[in-house]
Length: 367
Length: 84
View 1 (tube, chains in turn blue, cyan):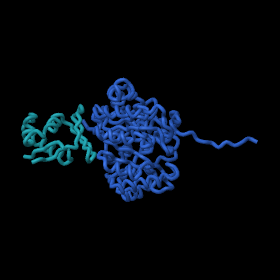
View 2 (spheres, one colour; view 1 turned 180 degrees about the vertical axis):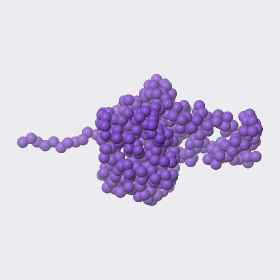
View 3 (tube, each protein chain N blue to C red; view 1 turned 60 degrees about the horizontal axis):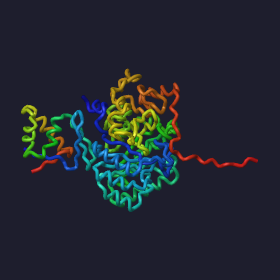
View 4 (cartoon, each protein chain N blue to C red; view 1 turned 45 degrees about the vertical axis):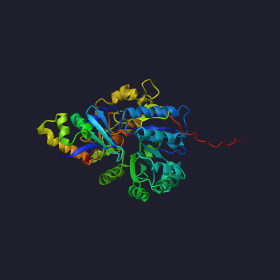
């Protein structure tokens, strides 16, 4: 049996998981997967966070991808980091860089098993700030300067590939190498606030083709295995070419709810809560949702396509939030089947505003 | 004959198909798809050399070359380290 087939049946514990610590964020990126902005009063307490780490250590989860929101906004963030490392749970955390001071940079550089990803979505301020907000490019580059200055090597510059930055890939490599960083590219998902901008920001078919060839030539660029739908273009991309949702990965949100993956923060993909009896381990091992995700996939409408073995129908979240059936083509299917399905216009699931800040509309006085 | 031990920065986790080995230093994940090989790897530091470890695990002689090759690959990916 191939490794991917074994993984598709699920592991006894996740290889890694995404852990969003807070919905609070000082930015309001247009594509935020978790619609972050305001903190949720039900957030896990420090004690509850530590109890989750104990469980992850017991299950031998190798590392956690910490995000948010902006995780460093939690006052107990640095204590949690130390507690993870002390318990042999490695940490990779994503940040917009706003809290990376020379002091925190030095602290990160001195800690083993901690990786940092600085999010940047354009190789120049104009492209980046259009997505992440005014001044966010300067904030991110200052943070990278401080990390490099503190002697931190090989931290990540993390980019969500969009229509507007897909032609800047070489510039991103140059930007990363300026700070001794490594480039990491991930896929734009129509999740959270991303649902509102996906139609205009997801890469074109021609851009996807170029991205695939570019990635094949650069196996050192990290992708979090997020472009496996592109493997239908030929030689598979490096990494696990399968949807790991509920099988090898999952997500814990700020209030302890467990979802199948970071891209499906929706009631339909919620498996349980770390606050339930039995904690995270019980959710991972016995939840109805995760058990069903570990059943063999049905290729559905993709059964007759010769590429199914390569792309496995693509990303579940991308299909769900664009209103496509889960056993059909990915909306960005490289053979165009997804685009054809989208034209039929199935209704898309309602996405709540989540924790987005209310938009302030200036009031005008009626005369 | 080479003697090995498990790299001190490697975590080994049993799975139904064998085990996962995660290297906390280079952050690489390795799949061990054979439960018997997992048993050898787990205790290899206790034996004077690889042959003794394979003896103890009851690996039949005709299968030895394949196991020795697997151990050499694990050394390359830094799951195992050679010791004197």
